[in-house]
Amino acid sequence: MSTFRFAPSPTGRLHLGNARTLLLNALLARREGGRFLLRLDDTDRARVREEYVDAIRDDLAWLGLTPDGEARQSERSALYEAAFERLQAEGRLYPAYETEAELDRARKLARASGRPPLYDRAALRLTPERRASLEAEGRRPHWRFRLSGGRVAWEDGVRGRQEIDLGSLSDPVIRRDDGSFLYVFTSVVDDADMGVTAVVRGEDHVANTAVQLDLFAALGAVPPAFAHHNLLTSAEGDGLSKRSGALALATLRDEGVEALAVAAYATLIGSAEAVRPVAGLDELSGLLDLRRLSRAPARVDMAELRALSEKTLHALPFAAVSPRLEAAGVGGGAAFWDVVRGNLTSLSEAARWWAIATDDGFAAPPAAPDDAPTLEQAARLLPPAPWDEATWKAWTGAVSAATGAKGRALFQPLRLALTGAPHGPELARLLPFIGPARARRRLDKAVAG
Ligand code: GLU
Image (cartoon, rainbow, N blue to C red; front, side):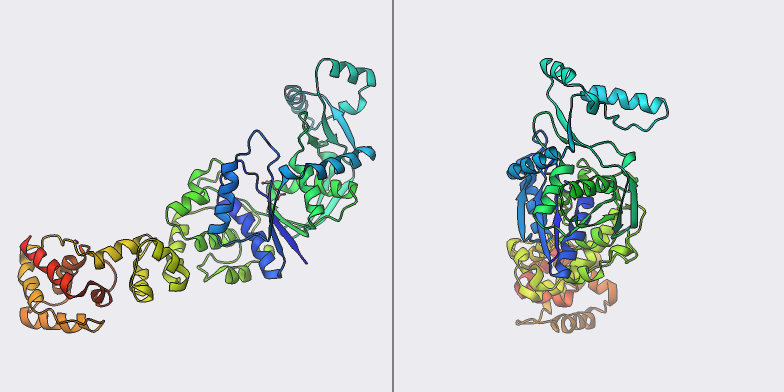
């Protein structure tokens, strides 16, 4: 069975770019009937915050994605320790003592003299005496993995055949001097242990993949298939980061953007497939094809996302929204939803229309003096209950016959008096929810001013 995973570091809120990685993995798992795991890469103790862990879970739930399992790297150190010992026993690890400042200086020096800023493996040449004296100074080692050299190649699910010369990369640090492990290593141990068969992630990880394939080989493990998707950028073309607050999923949710639209947008943008509304995640998973992702970064266009959200909302059946309508105090069942949905830019506006339709205290604004006679006649000619969708036509026909008012001159004053707004849902369908008593009060009020 195929196994996918989404592996965020809980060091910030998820943004639309993270959602792309999340959706690609979750939807492929869904389509293949495989497993989809949530793995929290929380080994960086200084930056991880528990509130971000909760936020990640909330974001997944909002998008309608339920992982088949969850793991936290902070709870798996025994596994990393064992893998570390194995690599050590095989002579693939070496301690190094350089400080960040020293490494930085060496990188600058290399650049200045036209060499690539690679780690020069100086620590491999330390004599036991030199090591002892560094430790006597109080330095603690961090640990590097000795890359095997040569070229690694893989068939990338998005980019096709990839080949990277390991000689062009620095030996990665896999353990910090405080004993904690780094993602590039823990991820390999976890992917092997959890039987992950496919990793879809951003193309900023391409070089990591070369390193990690070498780590899989050193650990005698079968690597997953890798695919690296193009990244999303802001409208200005900047990469998204934990600081891209405006494109955080939580922000979009608070602004009333539909979850299904976010899912469709994050999946379809930057691909040969047109961005379009979908009825659900199953339909979306059917549209997904990694080979049709483009290679260039894709710019997020908020206007496009909002338009998609509106279209998505308008098409949602009552069953898909009824818990949210209930939570917002909107009654009227499927009938009311069908009346208002086409006029909403976000679901929260349904509550405003429900109040407009059913609030007994709703006061119509005073009518323009020219409209008063029409509204007076309209109040007089209100049909008796019960009202249905045919009532509007019969009523306005009678008002027109009595006053001579027609078209806009008839409908606009009625709409303003009944709803307080110049635009809105079709009045013929809204009117039965307003009902005779409220309609009479509103017309009287509009005339009286
Ligand atoms: N924690 C890593 C990240 O957020 C995971 C990358 C991966 O999928 O391997 O970038």
